[in-house]
Image 1 (cartoon, each protein chain N blue to C red):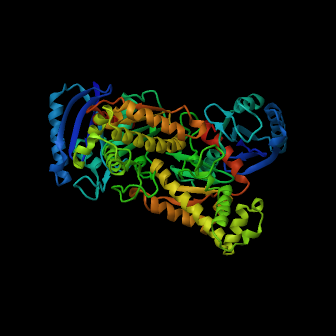
Image 2: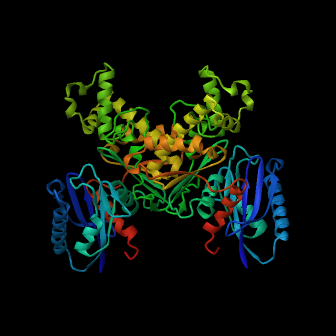
Image 3: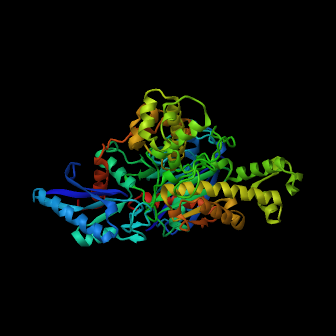
Length: 320
Length: 320
């Protein structure tokens, strides 16, 4: 019988689920509108229903080895979601236990960036690596740290929050309530803030001066930069400089072989990856210089979240 | 037969060696003047001679399980010392191989702070911990990171250089050639620089105004602070503030249960540990608040280096 796993990625808006084999093929997938479920038990009921529908679609000759879930504020050790600001379910949600009781298979839970890091190790560019960082540049900045072939979870299950290292003294206000967190600079929303700051601070011409602030997106900044818009190019350089500096400090902790960048911004190879590498090298302690690669994630598009979550099953279930 | 290990700590000035049992008792010890040996093979010859003398002093009923060495710029994977600025032996020194050939037992090598972190785990305050940081506040700032019960070595064997994270933009010139490294602030030499800076920037009275700059030491600053000297107290507070902030960023990487401080400065409990904890808490990302202890190392005095180095044998030799 072919071994399969379920990968679930819970986002504030949507939840996507998939049935995945060990080679990383997504055999079936579906999605739920997370926001619709005010009570988590209704969400779990519907998730189970959807999974049963998916199971009925595939060949019976499969053996389910477990469920991996990527979720915000996920505690790896306890299998709980704890006080996630972008979910409706408040307090501590024992999601792994709830799913386990419903489907009678082992369930593992970690935050989405940690799950994606495992996906990169099993199916992406980190296949032969034991020490790497994985950085997601989305609305915020998420990170997963793999050291000696294992995800670093920390004593409480919450390790790997490089987006919330403080990189600018008295810097930008962060959603977490502090100032100067890396994610207020290096993220889709961070680069947007940088553009608005640059528009206010200089008189340089920019196509973005004719766009409402609320319409300025990282995608638009990328497209403008590609066309040579100076403010957009400066925003990319500024983002890369701060990110490269922060990564130099991260390297001094776990000395990774490579740093994978994931998400919309990470696709801007020449605009972002090259200057990030330059800034990191300029700030690296000597013994680490010219040793650490900056690479775009090889997990492609919509597949990443499901593959990452399912990777938890293959790395954690010793019988899989 | 009782199992024993050899612990060796190689410093720029002195090398200390000891025979240690698994319970952390130092059965025999000796030392060498590192600087005397211009060629590393002469050093290795003399080290072996000294070890043979020590062996002859102990009961024959012991079984030697290996040698652990703590050394500057040590590469854990290769067993080499690489371009250590404070040693006379230049280039890449295959010390583990040289010792192994001489004594025919397995040899492990890592940097002194990493070795001490293992010592803390086996014999000190981290006995029941799997995730902690170990910080040595000596002339510089060394660090060892333990995650999930294992030392983080990184892909190249050089992980754990928190002393060389840049914490102040365009800050103090560091011995490594960059500016603003943590160790230029948080170390014995760092606090001395802070005192001299404070003496120059303010007109406040201080007993240290009557001391030659070259005579101002961290010990003297500690003693003056204890007597209420304002400049010395301010220097401690400034050191603690910067160290606490830097540690908050480190916590966001590996989420440790505790951070152990070791070395002369770390003995200044109320003057340093308390304000370090306060500064760290003020800068921690919410999910880590009130979870991370700041503790003085339980490895006492001259024993630490030997115990730490010998701990490598017990953690790495699976048959020990």
